[in-house]
Length: 181
Figure (cartoon, one colour):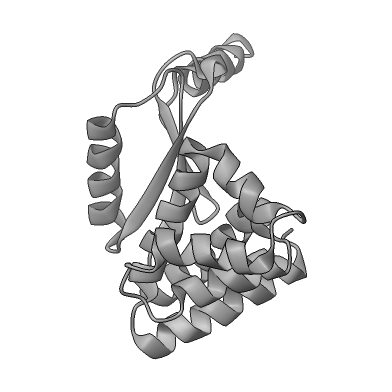
């Protein structure tokens, strides 16, 4: 369950993005901010700091993201910094993404596999499920060695299980049922 503060910030930005007609563009820009924080963790720490003067934080935000042609992006980031929520920007972005995907008709899913999937494999799975479901799909991948092999995909509460572990369990149940005859 998300924190209502994070949801409120995400909803505020979503409303502005919707009014501007750039829902997807804002989501892409927010993902860039998260990527910047992953590459340079000190950036997030700096913008989260109570020591750094607000004006300096605002200046840094303008320098880093002012060139992105989105009317409210820097203002939003400044509000997040002002409320000392930069440490939680990923949760806010997650809330925004859920709102954006719902508005754009994009279904999110998670792919579990025994070993990491390549970008090409993930793209192929995405296209396959887009054709199967008749809508845009956004898949994230997660490795789970206990699956032994194959993949399991979860989209909108529905699970498509093609894992070796699932097949072995089905075979076990079948053999148990046969042994009872």
